[in-house]
View 1 (cartoon, rainbow, N blue to C red):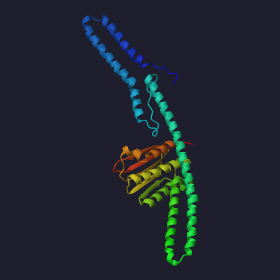
View 2 (cartoon, rainbow, N blue to C red; view 1 turned 135 degrees about the horizontal axis):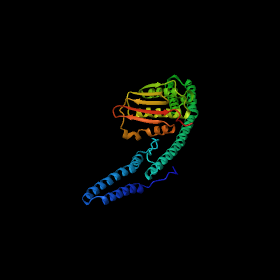
View 3 (cartoon, rainbow, N blue to C red; view 1 turned 135 degrees about the vertical axis):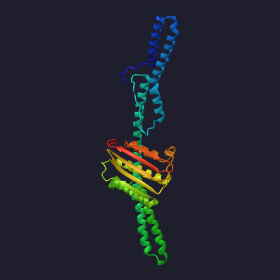
View 4 (cartoon, one colour; view 1 turned 180 degrees about the vertical axis):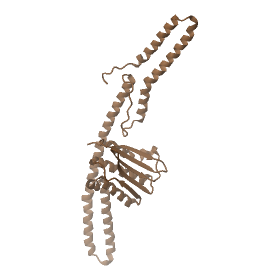
Length: 318
């Protein structure tokens, strides 16, 4: 591109206009006087037509550039201006804008990697502290309470049982929080088992019906990709329960051609697309960008919501 000779817009307009004027001058010089008015009018019309065509062609990339600048979003990468007439000032500007978009998307993705990796490391650390420190402390307290309860008179054992039940509830709560921070099933058994466990826990906690359709024959995915898919499913299901409660949420994971597709749909109220940024979808889009996937949201008020994450094979980062 650096070696391409740029033709100035001034010359692209001046040369055709000068040519029309020269031809008109020659025609007027050899024509009788009574026909010159008609020839002059025809020449003006031709010049106007040439200018309209040239201006539309010259500024069409500028209009596409304006539209793309208005719609540009780092969380929806890949949009570029199609350069059809290289070597002009406007197309040079369009190519520079394309290069700037590519650079910004790369920087945005690198920033997302640092942010999300740091966030997951912190979650892993907190989950370990909850499990190893607080969880073990509560377990030790429960064992100590059991020994003390055996020494109490029968009249006080009912209260001791209430304390024991409270400790058991606290232990389960700590385990649940630790599991949400860092799903053990994902590390131990893989994505399919982790999604099944997520559905079971959400159904138990909320009483909603959780349907799942998880293919067993999935291509091998890296740990970062599996974690991103899991987090998108977790956030999508949580959003459905929080913002558009219905009677059923369905989680599907399957292959479509050379792509892995996650779908989380519900039969709730749906929501207005203008409110999407306020519905926790930004984090899901960030994770989609991180693994090179595409996130699509189909939401209609009163007709439910479907969140679809599609990751073509070979696009995930190593």
